[in-house]
Length: 472
Image 1: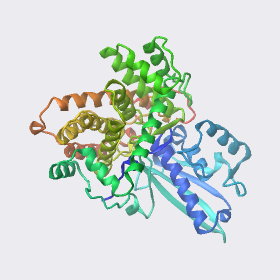
Image 2: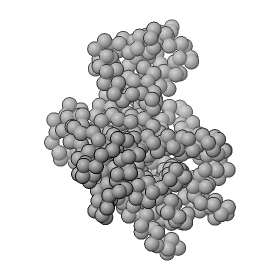
Image 3: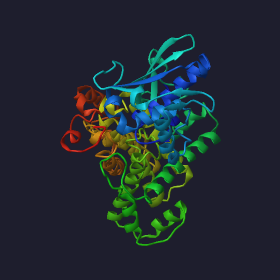
Image 4: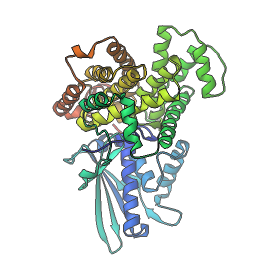
């Protein structure tokens, strides 16, 4: 079975969707790299991009069109300035030219050369796209990819290479493996995960990258808590995090993230205030995500607000330090990988239980680890969180990651904290439901779920909320 690093689960990129934005973006980058290495970039005489299934039905609202153009132009989703995206896309639409580099240009009309096959579903996965191009010697090539959730991609014919085959000292395929390894070696869950990570990179690199992920999450929360306005896409959704932040702080002054956190800690935060802060943090991230801002997949973009919200709650109200934050992210990443292996983290495959449900389980487990819960309680917290997301549908109104997606992140964060509290007050030996059983049930539920509730905007709220959005 594939071995998944924490840094495969947590990817820094651009919103609004890991499967519909970042996955296609990576697929375009991969095709570009293949062409460069095979025939030379000058070999391309034309390019058409075909979108199928869920990518075709909700791709425009999720930014798929934008992602594939930027990817083929060589832009990196981790490093691109989000403020530059509109200008780059406007230039392509105006010039009808896709610039591969400073010298090579391809005639490209986005309105004609990105083709949405809404009536075609490829068999491997609902999120499919193909790059059709002509190489030197007039050879026609069709490279097909599947965006399988969380920014992971698979090229057709290379399914066996969808993951990495790391030689981890403590290989984990199921939750029961976590219990076995921690029990046999007397280690915590985070220590087991750290040992696996250290088998493929240096410890200082691991800690540096975990710190980079956390600071990206923190900056995203801060931006979202200080940005007002209406989100793009035509639904006229107003940002709310900035207003909540201002009301809770009651005019306090600060000039940086550090000072902002210090001011929050100075407040006499009631239980109600803390709930408001958790919701504010989650709203902030997913408002940034919906506005094509920089986020961290956790494990997806649509669910990117849950883990940062719970981690910020832990950081501020439990005064967690760098080591605590490292432990949190290590455990959260491992729980996400277990869900990916045993079920799915793609809403197009499993509905929103695969995104908000998984992120809530990840956050619940990580929080439990960090307040010294046993490995059994860590897994119990994850199980509780997912158990109460089973069957959740994905029904984005207008094909946008806004309604109900943004608010669902607040619910997932609160459920994660509640699951942690229940697990800490429980004795796992009396539990009737295991995490592995919940993951199995989640997958069976995904298989039974009607396709219209899997990120197609053909059922649920998407059908019953009238909107005037061109992408519908």
